[in-house]
Image 1 (cartoon, rainbow, N blue to C red):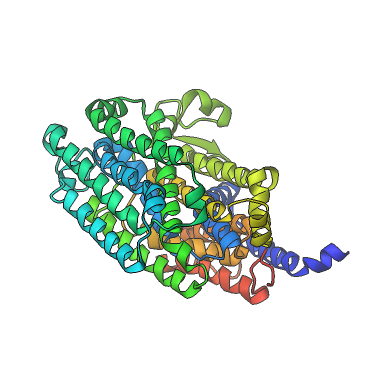
Image 2 (cartoon, helix red, strand yellow):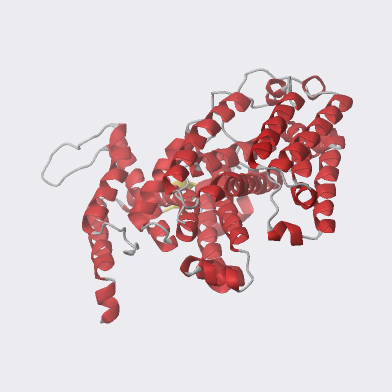
Length: 494
């Protein structure tokens, strides 16, 4: 009885939502209803991949990351680039790794040099100027112009990429820029002074060696990736997108958000500004137009036997669609749903069945006590931010064959993600699941009304709506939920 009283509002909200769904699907054929539900769950899985990161980050660190949609977008572009144009990665990765190698020297510099604040600012500005000088006239437009590029012009790799000697000069320049920039971050904290120098030098050597290895295998690596089976290439693209999102998220938390934990308004302004900066970066590198990633062979086979009669038959045929309730449904959308389910289970296991999850939950309750136990809470915060960002990057790659990649996708999915977390409750992973399903179903149902209309029992003709109706349906559900429970379905009062 106590449990019912504590969750009374949540149960009432859920009951009302279920009634609304039942009325919405009343009178529909089983085929139409199943198609709308599956389409809604597909969208819900995508929304969860980005909204779960927002909830995870807010739940631990009370940070509303308005740049989370940009991490989704960068993950999509990184995966799409790996899949269609790996030479762009092979020619840009060595330059970035060289800068990271130089910047990793910061703990070593902190042992010998203690710069005043004005000198650190000056070192940062000089390092930035050196980095810009090192990448001047870099042929990014030629490297992008390959295959399904958005320039509409294909340039051969031999013509697009720079000679080895020129690239080595750029790598040396970026390494020096990283070393100078590291002086700006060389603070004499106890953590840095106690850090083993051998470990730091080993990391520097590892990043520098990685830069050289990637540079020297860029031609062979490009041919190897393009010669891969599309299924394996797609799996590696998923890893690339998730890694890109995670690395960007970790860098954002460490370099930009960490100094602003006590200033939430500054966090919001900063991350919101980053959204527009990242949008312009994408337009500068990949162009203003969009593109689609090819669906891998696992989900795109077309033959006389297709669509597959059921899921078991599909494992042998790999058809592009499967009959569900007598109507074909794209098999790739079922894969999106599967990824969403796997991520829900993985996050649940991480938070409830691992030591790291225990540290996360303890850090939420009392970070000072966790610090007293010898656990570096700041490092945990960075890892959590990276995990949330990696989920967004993974979602971007999963969405690329379904929705394509385009510059405006960051703001579009960011809006849907915040609607999801507001409906489910800020900081709640179960809430992110419930909110994502509701928003996905509402959007799919709204799209169906736009295409086919809705037939009310007392009306002879079906009522149709404009495309704006589908977008407005998610906001309407958010308003209803907040009217009944202002904290969201699974939200709790502070």
